[in-house]
Length: 160
Image (cartoon, rainbow, N blue to C red; front, side):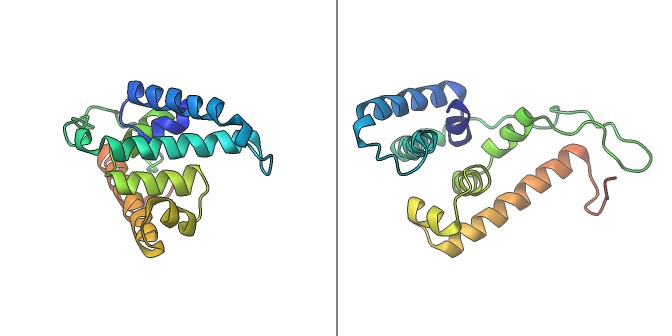
């Protein structure tokens, strides 16, 4: 559950607080679980909703955080065929995702990691379906640009 909260929060300590709050909601509302889906899915949904609520309640604080410098994050090691030997780690990718603007990050996380449809995302975030689709596309483009900048990739390099 911490992993879910980390995708919506900017710092680990913040994600831990959100997770704690989420589990309090789980235990407080356990009698409301209707067994229509999996228990894990129900808990995940509570964690996502708690993360989103926390974000909206603390929006003013997000503009005061610093963005980590990415230039020294990785060294590039590739062979003559343009195949990269040191792909970014899971942690590095999550760091890049966390640097996305909030709207992009939420839509990206909900679509990619939580398997929400654009209709579900739109309903959850109070945006239109087209806005959800647009923010997902923009998030993907930003991530691609960041990865290209880090690895100094050429846009049309093919991997084996």
